[in-house]
Image (tube, rainbow, N blue to C red):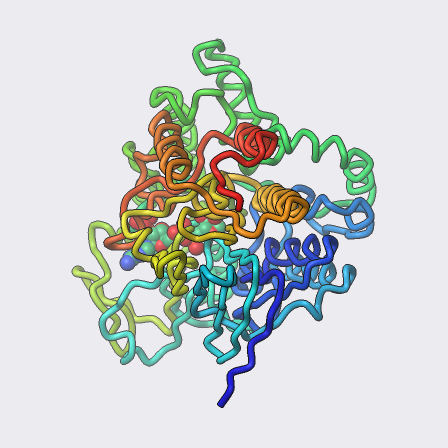
Length: 536
Ligand code: NA7
């Protein structure tokens, strides 16, 4: 049988925020382009993560595309923090509004991508048996798209139902009257707890590490508030661009030492409640992610709030993060009534560090202490973050070099955008960039715009092969490590460090020094004619 191969200028892997914008921009430039998407719908993260309470913890006005003023004007966000279903509707709207649907192939999980040096083409294959050839390959595969679940002995014998937060059934799950075990207290678990508690007869939360969570202060938008916010949209976007996380958080520019105790207290209070909320707490003091003493001040404040809310002192102590975890070292959780939920009689917390879950039984889960009889098990146990999605694909570059092998000791790249040995392949919002520490949509737009400018210039100059040099990549990897080492981030066993996956190399995978500095760096590279890239 002769295999039919589709030839395109560009293939994009993934139809989340990144892939959709990449498609839009590639079409604008007149490229023939297709997006391959594993799911049977668009939306990426927002397609898969349908668990109860799922919402974005970056404010909706920021966590949205900025490329179209009309889109900004016409879309109506209902709340300060948008729920999953609304974000998915927004993405669907964007796809229709910009007539992108015919460029997206669903149910197409990419299994391999192989570079042909002689023809300067990538051959991309899907698990479903399709094959494509393309000049440019853009990996828009997401930082949190490979769900991670502990290999729980006996799960196959469990007679109830079990779920993973990122593989949630489309039809939803009704836990009414059920006894539910929830494993994991990262952002997903923290969002789920209050909602499942409303339905379940009993909710037992298995916590291995207590993380910090701050109140979202989520509110519905009134028409007046939304109109006022939209009138200032360009300013808001401009301030976001200059903010370290790509969203305006009213960062305090003073270190703790530059403030009186009274001022410190007022700053902490402002960020915890009222006009604050959410990630503003990460910007309480300019030095909170570099100075242990300052960080401890924020951490102690947060622990005091937990103790003030949770009435049972034993539960409160368990929910308080330990001293060795810096505030913000693991990604900060943003919640709506998480701690309050533990005041409900039918909600309990189990110390899964002291008493690890050993196995599932036919009727529940067993720790080294006792068995918990449950009807359902919910895994909110996270992802093989950042490098997982690219390592899941068999990517082979120059001379058959395998990306998985190259990344055996941790992901490496130049600027997070290009990888030596893998010409004409670009990564959007991947490791080596600040994206996972930022407003992801902002970082995605920055990356795609940069890639398109590079391709425009390459085409104008007749360049057919673009490849990061090994020296440039080595320099960038060093720089990322040096920047991270100036901070408290590497102290935490976070998914930023790969620490949540047994055996995964322990390296800090993001560029930690913020969106504005990163943008200046990549713009300077462009201005110097893309130094660090070989263009032939
Ligand atoms: P996270 O943040 O990686 O959280 C996963 C949680 O699951 C975390 O509390 C883990 O504990 C826990 N976990 C993982 N494996 C186990 C086992 N075997 N036993 C007990 N507990 C376990 O994933 P999320 O989905 O919540 O959030 C991911 C990102 O999505 C989030 O950061 C936002 O960016 C949005 P640990 O801390 O490793 O001890």
